[in-house]
Image (cartoon, rainbow, N blue to C red; front, side, top):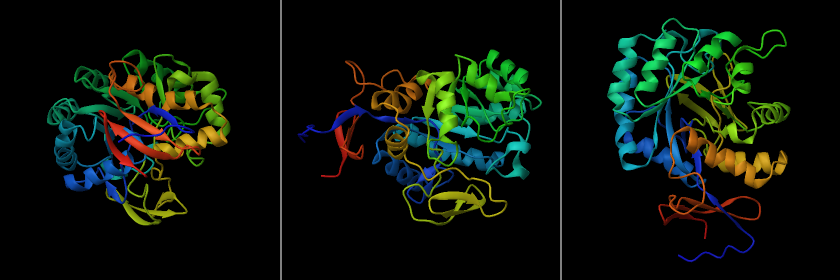
Length: 339
C-alpha cells in the first residue's frame, strides 16, 4: 500500500511498558484470545510494542496468567510480561487485592520467574518489604527490569533499591508516599536519579499537568516513559468491569473501584496521551514521541525499535493533522489503516 504523507507525520511505533488490557478485554486472563484482542486494540492506536501487565493475585492465578500470555510473547504480540504485584505495599495498594498482597519470598519469586522462562520483562516491587532487596537481585538476574512502585519507601530506602539495580519508577507519584519538603520519599529519589526511567500516565486524571511539568524539568525528556496503565475499558464504553478480581466502574472514561473508589488504572491509549501532552501540554511532537517510543524501548532493552533509523524495525505510525492515528506498520507491513 502506498501512503501519501503530505500534511501528515511519520513516527516510530509506540512502546507501552505498562498495560493491563483494552477493548473490553484484559491480560489478566487464562483466555489467550481475550489477551490477543486487548493487544489488537492498542495496536490500532499506534502501540506496536506492548507489555502485558498483571496485577496482584494468588501464586496459582499468576502462574496460569503467565502461562496464558507466554505464547503471545513468543509470537510477538506482546514484548513481555509485567508483574505489578503481589510484592507491593498495603498502604499504597491502589486497585490491587489487599488480601493477596505479601512480602517477596525467594521461592515464590524464583518460581514465577521460572514459569515465565525469560518472558517476564519487568516486576514492580515495594523495596521496604522484608526480602525485597534480595528479590530485586533475583529479578535482575532473570533478565527483567526491577521497578519501584506501590511503595511507602522513604528517600533512603528508595536510594538503596536504585543502588541495587532498580531502574524504573512505576507510574511515578501514583500509589506512593507523597512528596514532602522534609520527606521526599521514593518520589524524590526516583525523580532525581539519572539511572531511573519514570513512568507517567498523561491522561489529565492521574497526574496534574503542573506535576508533569515538574517531573519533566527535573528528570529531563530522556527519562520519561509515557504509559497507559490501561484496563479493559480502554477503547470501550463506560460500564462495570473487572480488574483482576476487583469490580471497577467506569464513568466518563474514569475507572474507579466499586469498593473504596480508588483510581483503577486508566482508559487511555498512547495516541490519546500523545495528543494530550502535545496539544494541551505544549510539548513539541519530537520530544513527545521520545517519551512514547525511544525511552521505553531503551528501558526494556528493545534496541531494534523506538526510532526511525537504518537497521531498526519498520514499526511506524502515520499521524494525521490532529495527531490521530491513520495507519500502523509492523515489521514493514501495514496492519491498520483508517483509509
